[in-house]
Length: 151
Image (tube, rainbow, N blue to C red; front, top):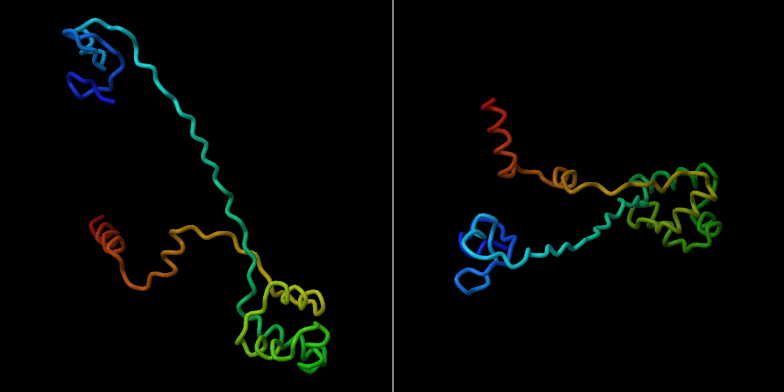
């Protein structure tokens, strides 16, 4: 809150100036009688920052890995599906890359066939995401280029 007289500085006192109580800064307090200091209300705000959580995801080349695991085991798609207690249509779509397996199915395949299908990825910062998605120059990119050229 600013001083009621000069408006420039932070008010620190309540003073009576010409019969009126005003909130004034230290300099303007001399124009009246200081009644009391302004109590500072301190609000303590606790901001909890969540740790970036690692997220599990199925690897991009899951279809190839699953097909190789099945073929190495000498199983048909139908036998493979039966071992996993899954529908044949699901296994076909997964092997063709038409369906990303759920984490539950990926874990079952990992356990039964000893392949790595799930990886952990920590949260990516906004800046990294922006650079991954940006394909054309932004105004910020142009300013950065201009700065580099001028130095």
